[in-house]
Length: 308
Image (cartoon, rainbow, N blue to C red):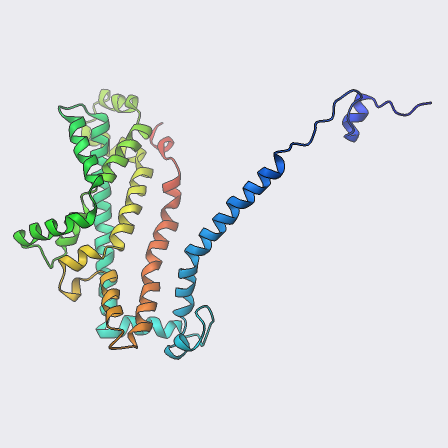
């Protein structure tokens, strides 16, 4: 008796093909798909190494004393001296680094929060209100995106000098409030996150425009606000050229300008090399913390939490 015949149920249970079912040929494009995936992963790994290698070197170098800093390899550990280096950074010159760090927090946190709020309000207005010349005015805002910030530094310095704001905290805080790209991005977020129906329902219920924006639109725009805040925070934290032009008093320096001054003095005082390296590592930590703490708000959509 022939045993070549396989019932359909038996074929399903054993995984053998049914009689008369054509066998699918091997896809010729499969090896190419694996090759392309491997190439993409290889490029991503190289980019990750390119990004992480400077941070890794900075972390290793900050743990060394002055002898091991120049006597060992760049990625070789020496005698662990991180805590002593950090203490030296914060005690050098009567703790001027701590003052620079507080100044940078003021410039970055306060300036970025106000800038993001202004940008969100302006983007919301451009999206939800109709007024004469709206698109032309928005075109002027977009033109501001095309102007490099370095080009505006000298005019801003002349204006601040006429107003008597140079060498003050306002010299860096006021320019940081204006963010044309933030206004454009906020309008895009408003178009996608805030439905017209919700705004109209709030108006029918008797809510004023300010209350509608504060209690309904702003919670919906929370992901956009956090995104703008992170962009502005990073730009303010790394602001160097504007501080270099506007400030002369060392007590008003942000940490980026202060580290630059330490780095310039290395030729005359080699001991400043260790201070500059450890100070740079400390300056990176707040930016990393900000991204880790806010990435959940940045990546999630909070529209459902504002609409019942």
